[in-house]
Image 1 (cartoon, rainbow, N blue to C red):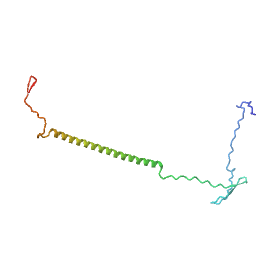
Image 2 (cartoon, rainbow, N blue to C red; image 1 turned 135 degrees about the horizontal axis):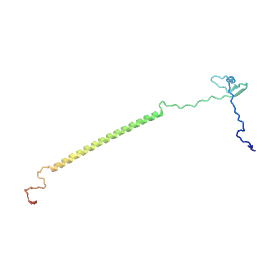
Image 3 (cartoon, helix red, strand yellow; image 1 turned 90 degrees about the horizontal axis):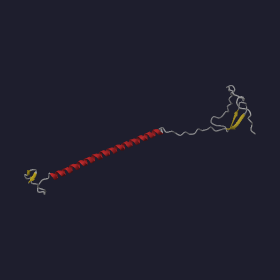
Image 4 (spheres, rainbow, N blue to C red; image 1 turned 60 degrees about the vertical axis):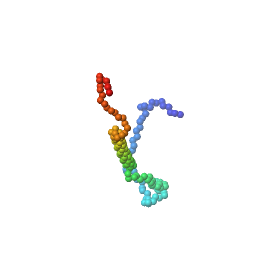
Length: 154
């Protein structure tokens, strides 16, 4: 069933090399052209081969290329960069407004603290330096005191 290999396949086998035969332009004869109406294709086409045989077949309609999607004048990457720039400017404007708000709020709080200190300080000053016109209070009489041997005699 299978051929037996009783000979070694090394150097005993002859190697055959095939060289291609070049085709010269004189050996090639173009096929005759079949007249065709400029805007119409016949339903059956005939081609005469170089050896004189005629091959007839149905005409194949020309292949229409696929419609190419129309590209916009501006690339998508440029649109993305522009939108990113607009978003960045919006964020920067928002941050600027936020920092302005924080600065104004800090100034307001500082002014309120200063106003409270002035009012409270004025109230304290009025309480301490108030006029003695009949208001009740503690009266302190200072007399001459005598100190003898580090002991107070009043």
